[in-house]
Every structure is written in structure tokens, then in C-alpha cells.
Amino acid sequence: TAKSDWWKSAVVYQIYPRSFKDSDGDGIGDLKGIISKLDYLKSLGIDAIWLNPIYTSPNDDNGYDISDYRTIMKDFGTMEDFDLLLKGMHERGIKLIMDLVVNHSSDEHQWFKESRQSRDNPYRNYYHWWPAEKGTPPYRWSFFDVNSNAWKYDTLTNSYYLHYFSQKQPDLNWENPKVRNEVYDIMRFWLDKGIDGFRMDAFQFASKDTTWPVLPKDYQKDVIRYYGKGPHLHDYLQEMNKEVYSKYNVMSVAEGAGSSPADAMQFVDPDRKELNIAYHFESVDIGNHINDFGLVKYKQIFERYDSTFKDKGWLAIFLANHDQPRMVSKFGNDSAAYSALSSKMLSTFVLTMRGTPFYYNGDELGMTNIRFNSIEDYNDVDTRNKYTALQQSGGNLKAFIELKKQTSRDNGRTPFQWDNTTNAGFTIGKPWLKVNPNYTSVNVAMQEQDPNSCLNYFKKLIQLRKQTNIFTTGAWALVDKNNPDVFAYTRINGNERYLVMLNFTSKSTSINTGINLEKATLVLSNYPKTSTIGNLQPYEATILKY
Ligand code: TEU
Image 1 (tube, rainbow, N blue to C red):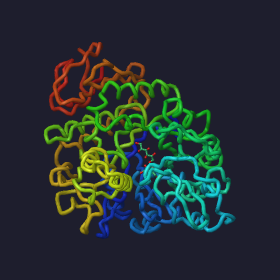
Image 2 (cartoon, rainbow, N blue to C red; image 1 turned 120 degrees about the horizontal axis):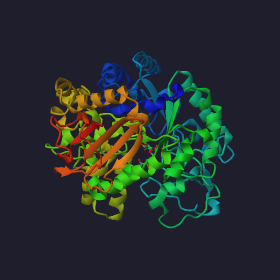
Image 3 (cartoon, rainbow, N blue to C red; image 1 turned 30 degrees about the vertical axis):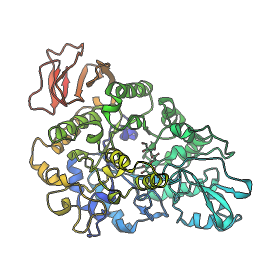
Image 4 (cartoon, rainbow, N blue to C red; image 1 turned 120 degrees about the vertical axis):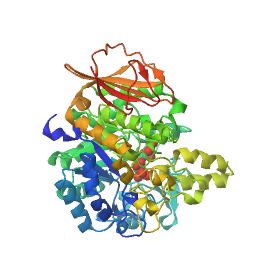
């Protein structure tokens, strides 16, 4: 791949800074904490880090509500810390991708404070307002609002403002060129510091039909179709590319990329000059647990996307992030017997697919869902507000808590497990979110010593992805596609041929590859002894060269 396409062969590691490493004992992870772990990050072999938002924020949604885009959140440190972090990363050959959250700002951003003052304030049109004398605005669903209503009435000017996420996250009005230019300036500010790209948070929602048509009843069940294709979305992206991205050798990721492969292609078709990588949600929105939706349906998603993207465009491959439960708790099996095995199997998947792997911190250790028993333990605005809503409507709170043990975003946000000292070595203070009690057996210190650990297996996978570019560019095709237990595929580049076989179940099973494997050689497996050809042990992952 060309030098400017470095992001195609990169492995991106996502750091949730609040939970990674606390340096000052306030219980919250910070930039100095990350700096102290740079050698760990280097040892993984990853190429780039995506850092969740670190800008000044009142933390209604843990940094996704930004009140100043050019300063660092006090909890996380200072701009000096940031400069040192970037320098330390670059010295180790690691690139930095920042989160760009510009579908909305915080309600505590200066722009919004001005905007709400009066109907003729110069910042009024930075946001979407509906004057109350026109009646109630056409209903818009909100992801996080307790009343699921994205219009919030504000007495000060007798108007409603729009917030697709929480009430403290008002949506910016992208139709206003001043807003667009403000954002381009913010982007230049960080790119000129030398960062290597942006993940564009929820940007698919940025363009709204401001004639505010009435939407069909229950449209929110298919919300991306209605919110993810605003009338000017791609005009904005093309303008942003022309004004900013085209001037830098950096990468851009569309977080959310419509609701079909064709939609996703629109964001990243090189001829359109918009973004680089499409990060779509079909493979995580499919359901709460692999046993519910089944492997065959899951495989079909990847087949549909890969067939659209085989000649142009580029995808992200991921199983988890800070909005998801832990990868092993959703797609694998986190029981004592199978947790490590299935974690390794899932890592094999992420690192051998076509697309750029986005790998979530802690998954390299096999970290699992925490499964809080009480709402008091939760921090996540989404979980808390939905609980309150249910409380108000007299719903089944017990069932809700059971469901959140599987799905809450906080499952993936518990502190990183460094060692078996107090609080997993994350902080000497009181952690902002409880540490998973399994830290005594799942942690970096132990796994670094164990040649068979998840951590060491993850490092091997990264080395493998670097030794050959087959996993980046090789053609991808499903094998035994209707097999309900096994996710298997080939990666082929001319004479170089690899077969990846992943057993997604806790039973021994078989696979019909239709390939002559007599001369095949073993590349990597999560078992010391792989099965005879055609058979796979529980959660076995085996890569063969043939
Ligand atoms: O998430 C945006 C978003 O659209 C997700 O809620 C998505 O629909 C879901 O994960 C699909 O399963 C981003 C951030 O990742 C999230 O943490 C923020 O809360 C949100 O934007 C608002 O900024």
C-alpha cells in the first residue's frame, strides 16, 4: 500500500483515558498515566492509538460533551502533558488519533451559553432552535434523554433546542458556515500539533433536514436510516476534506457510516474525497449476545460489507469499544473454563480480517463484563437515564438491571487491570468506577510472565500481521459459510494462501473446508495442539498456510 495509506496496514489500539492509568491518586485515569505506560503500549506492537475525548468537559457523557475544544480536561492533566504524550508516542513510532466530537457540544460551551441568551444573539444559529409560539416541534427521538425527547424547552427565550444525545449535548447547526469554519479551525489546531488523524464522533448525524418533517411512528427503531443521511452530510464532508484533510497526511474514521454497505461506501470512496475508514455498527447492533443472533447471520454481515469493499473503500474491524460490553462477554464465553481461549479466538478474528483493526484496551487481557447488581454502581448517562425513565413509567427495574449486566457501556469502562495490587494497580485512590474483582487473575503483570497468556498471544497476532501484508490486502472469502459453529475464511494474495478457522462454540465441532490441507502448515493457534484436519476444539482458533 502507498505510504499515504499507512492507516490501511495499521493496528489501532483504543485507550479509554478515564480508565487506563491514574498518576495522581484522584481515581481518574490521566495523560501522565498513559505516558507512564508508553513502554507497555510499544511492547504490544500496535501502530496507532485512538484516544477518547480528552478536552475540557463537564463530563455528563465522559468527555463527549465538550465545553472547550482547545484545552485539556482538568482530570486528565495539562497541555504540557499532552505535548509530552504525543512526543513520547511519536518517539516510539506510535501515531495518535484524536476523537472529534462536533455533532454537538456541551451546553456549557461558550457558544451555547451565548446562543441561549436571546433570539438575536450572534451565536443563536450555532444550534437548532424552535420558537415555542409555533407550537410543539415535530417529535425527535433522543438517545439518552430521560423522556426520549430530543427537543428541550428553554424558558429564557421561550424556545426548544435540539439534542440527539443528552440535554447537556446540544446539536450544532452545521448549516451555519460559521460553525463549519470554527470546526475546521479546531481541527487545524490539533493537526498542526502533529496528531495523525481524527475519529469523527457521530458525524453521520450532523446534517439535519431543518424543515423538520414529521417522521413515521417508531422511526427510532431504524434511527440511523433517519438520522444518518442528512441532506447535506456529504457536502460537509467534502468541504472538510478540501479545507482540512487534504492538506495533511493523516487518517479519518467515520464513526457510524449509515445503515448499509452502500451508505458506508459513500463516506470513504476515494473518488469522493471525504474520509478514509468506515466504522459501521451493523456487526455490533445485531444483538446482545452471539447466542441470540447466531453465527450465520453474523458472518453474512461481513460477507455483504467485504463484497462491497473488495475493490475500493476501506473498513474498520472491531468487536468492542467504550460503547459496548466486553468482546469476550458478547461474542465469546467469559466463564472460567473458556474466557482466555475464547478471548484469543476473538483476537484472532480482529487481527486477520480485511480492514483496519480497532482493538479496545483490556481485551488483550481478556477483561470481562463487570455485571453490576445495583444502579448505584453505574456511571453511564445512558444506563442511568434509561433506569430513571423506567422508574417513572413503573417498568420492570429488576429485568433492566439484568439486561444491563450484559449490555451496559460501563461493562467496558472499568479500570484497566495492571497487576494484583489494590485496585489492579490502576489508582492509589478510589477508582471512579469499580474495578472488576477478577483483576487478581486477569492482569498485565501475570500475563507478561505467562508465554500462553492472552496478552502474549495478542502480541504474536500483531507480529504475524506485520510479517506479511496478506491480512491487510489479501482477498477474503468465507469457507463453509452455513456452518453454524465455525467462522472460517481464506486470505489469498497470488500464491500466498491462508485459512483462518474459528470455533465460536464451547463444543468440539467439524468444518468442511473443501480445501486440500495435506501440505498445510500451522501458522498460529490458541491450542498447544491443533485438532486433526476438519475438527476444531472448543473456541479453537487456527491459522494455516496452504
Ligand atoms: O456514539 C455515537 C453513537 O451513535 C452510538 O451511540 C452508536 O449509535 C452505538 O454505539 C451503536 O451501537 C458516540 C460515542 O462513541 C459515545 O460514547 C457518545 O456517548 C456519543 O457518540 C455522543 O457523543
